[in-house]
Image (tube, rainbow, N blue to C red; front, side, top):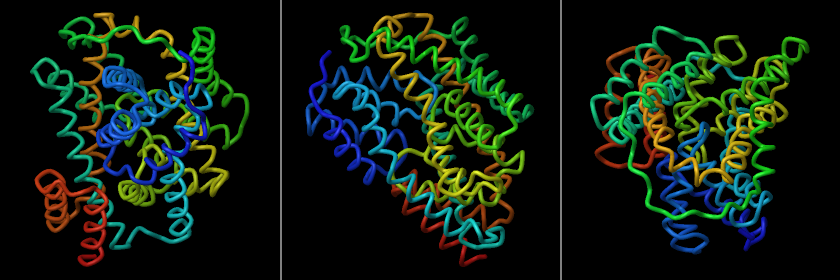
Length: 393
């Protein structure tokens, strides 16, 4: 399909979304629909639903990948880059500035940091509940989620998520009923099959090659790129699901302190745009160089690069893939495993690091009630929790 817009046009619209899209990936999909389908008519409802399904079928940040897909469809490969840049830049800049302000300060005893940690409990608990209702509606899928959670708690390794997700896909392929197929016709791809194949080859070459290169080259910059590329390439579900893998990647080896990690995660709830921009904060507060702006740039680029390669690689073949019963069965199992992984992350490191007294639990429950019952925006809940932490701290 011929591109009908310009990268600059896509950048302007995506930047507006990047400045105003609060609420996480599910809310982002609503913002995107309102802007791209209802307001601008860049694509119809059926095509939009198809791109949503594609972005949710791939590892990585679903809302960012949806923006890349829409931008690519509108203005080619540069349009995809513009769609990502506009949506990502505001929150990335805000988090790096937060890192610059707080990075040189010992945050371990700050009351407002205590509040940010408690806010993270409420935000992730809401995410677990929302995803469980949507992705584990029956007992077979709940069983997959429970086994995934127990495995994730018993086996804490950067590679455990990969094995758990693969096992979930296998269980789904063999045991679960497939989700219904979307009744949409074939959609011409804005990316050629040659480009798609090249993108997929690059995706797997980097996934395998970067760890091997680390064995040969002793470079902290290369280690950072490998760690964040792997995080972006192997996490299904996006958003909060990245938390346990990033924690194991940067806190366990001592690159970032646990206190700084959770403070940044709490701050990430208060900015618009994709949660994966948390990587920019982590790159900025690294204890080893590169840190600051260079570290933020490397981490942000590395964690989002798999999204570009996967979207551009999948677009030419998506129409065939989405009609495969086996693929939809495997995806059903993968989604259930993702719920289990996030449930385990809710307990550790989030709950165990944040809830240390009855007053902490009370603040967390109040924050969760505001999110679920009061439908308060996450930024409001985060700010209130930070204030409460400062008061009780």
